[in-house]
Length: 272
Image (tube, rainbow, N blue to C red):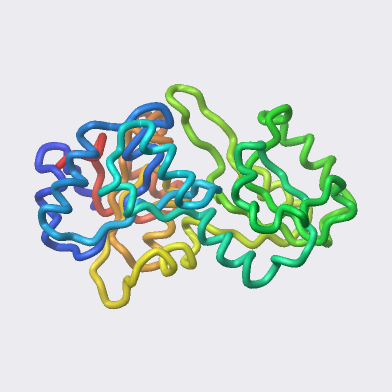
């Protein structure tokens, strides 16, 4: 049975956990502004000396996301807790793919992910040794058929996907993410190496989590909650995020069953 914490708040269960993985987009901010009460909850965790990671499927290095958050008004004592899927992917690429030529799929704003090996960026897909997907091209941000045509005859190459999210809400506007492109590639028979939730690597890179009682907080059943389930962590779903319409129409029990996920707690928004 999923417990609703809207009345009791996060404070009612906080002492049961030593480590908190907290999603950024959809929980702490909406892509445009910070959620005030969520920020207050983070400071309450700090007061209790609780470990927490602001774990995000952003396809960029930690420093880049930190600057983005600071522009919204987040203080450095919180941004120091950020860990991104882009950072996890970058660590892997530097070890295993640094000398190989790649073809980048995503907007120009993601270029800083591969600054260290940008000389290996191919302008032609056929000349690349692997595909690096951080998102969608700006001119084809809503047309997945474009990518199906693009990948034809190239599914023998591996794809590195730095953001497994399928969609995200920027304010009130829903946008496709890199995970949607990777799904097209997989359905065509291509192999994808994912970095980000729900895959364990990003959790394990971000902090020492061995032997700790963990609560994962997020708004996405496919990534935040599935990641928690895979790692046997308890989970708290923020209902006013990605799945708000589904939950409003069908209820959390039916929606979590549809996504084959276990949700221990829900809140409309993250509040202390």
